[in-house]
Length: 310
Image (cartoon, rainbow, N blue to C red; front, side):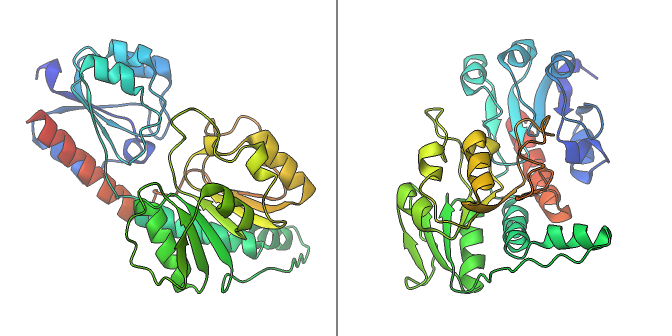
């Protein structure tokens, strides 16, 4: 088979075990090229693998301009998610490489994990579990979500699902999204606001937005200094949204009662300064790592490749 019919597959969830939709690509006549199983590929590995590939089913791995330069035959990158912050948009545009996303595929999984992290932080579940397993009996007074003010920044597919779940649980939502989509939520329980006001008033704050286009940090030292004492902050979006040094300072001071996060930079974290903090609940980028989300995302990503390369 011609090398021009090769498709590179790099998401960790797809290199660990075969997936029917990847086999569907093979049945369409493409050769499938995998990176190391279950690992985020390095720049050098991508430079070795991408030459001759016309399609790339990509994950969250960083893609550098050097990798794009090596992609001599690449026509399309199909993400098995919605974020494209790891892709050098300008370099890809100059090479004429099309970028496609799996719109909404992982929204239920990430939204459910967000709710799970909220409850884990509100009730100190990891602390209790670790303590009992260590032979102690830790009891930290928790809070309930009903009647709480929950701030949501970003109401795309994931954020709007979180908003609906939170309202159903009895909390009040104040949200920011530049497009202000119609979420069909009761006006007595939901309102739009601006970022500064939401950060300063929310009792629970959850992030579901891309990185600012100007390269700034969304929750910088100034904004973190305005939060209500005892804030619970949840981040299943991007690590770079929060100033890490300022966050650690707020955690040390107890101003932020808990930070529950599914995302780090880099992944896995090299330093445990944040991930190992006693007020941090950490998961290993598992928001979209459910059987259902992986199936949806892989099906959409494969369909996008077939459509683009037909």
